[in-house]
Image (cartoon, rainbow, N blue to C red; front, side):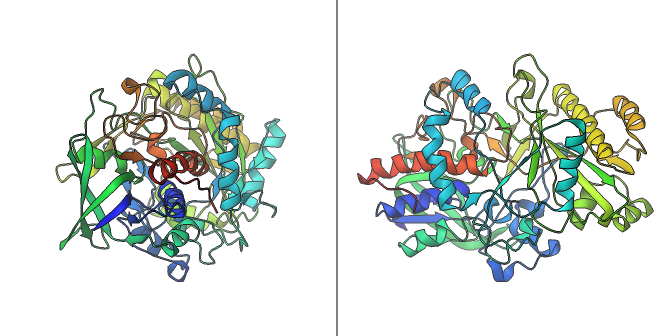
Length: 508
């Protein structure tokens, strides 16, 4: 196949890029490893959604198995299965990037129009429906402790408030790439290859001269006899953090400063559940509509790791896989699931030498593996987050609180919990850690020695290669990342369209 631009992936970065490049009249091929599924396939069943829409059936893990990673693997990528939470990149994060990674143009004012365009294009705005009980309890506890809690913007249009966002939206209300930018790009002539994995980029004289891809079966294993080679003037890698660095590693791209795959961040997440004397039904209604940043903004040099509090949905498989009991104990937890409230804490990694993230490596078959050490610094943040969540839940009226930690017991009051949490062994595997946010590994920087790509998203050493996804973030951002990807890639892809076609374009 031949085209002007080939885009690897179909998630947040790929969708924005595809719409803008096709608006500039360019011939675009989009290559997606996962399957094409649409609203008719989304039946609000975890048993169907996780195997068909997520990397490794929603069981992707770090090298030591200590962190479970939820990451999309379908047309639309993680935008098809995320919980719609939309935050602009925090000012403190941008300031850190300017200071540490020589990115002076990444200011709030400079990014404002790019975020605004993305928000208008994807119907990102306030959620005006009252929060479900799971989120309302976050606000109740926060208010009683004098902690600020605010509303989360969502990218939805005509939402039915079903609460099954993580299984794909059955009503097409979620304004993911699946129903917005990708259909527009296809209407303009873009071609979409699905269940097709790009194995490597072919390099000659400092340029990509071809891509080699192979078909994959529904379970991700290769489909023999389905090879394809694609030639393009320009290549945009948008496979998401972990997969994008892995592709560049498999392709043996130049990496003179050993930055490729390094500084890959997760927002390590710890979870606390609480049983109330009334129905909570955390599966019912919009999944995440309130948050608190009270514990997030700390001194990035001398302070401890900061974290953001949110209230995730409570569905049976997600709930049971993060619960610490088994057998009769787990059965009791599931019987009480309708009265169970959940909180999570997103730890902001990447701002301190002791939270330098992880390293993407390759297994013997070329598949990616993330080695992410849970350092004492990170685990201290996990302990403080457990304390914050337990205190908030008891303030909201919880009968008992149980942490996602194998050594934790159910606690009947705040005093008991505070004493016990201070003594917990904060070790990997004992502490249940998860993440749905993967960033970094192809970091952006204003100096070649500090990053994989330049401030315009182009690879420092390869002339016709750009990276447009969350892997270019120099750190984690301290918030759900989809809008940060939309806004930044909007800026980068608009410039790329102008450079390649000479035409000025903008999101529809």
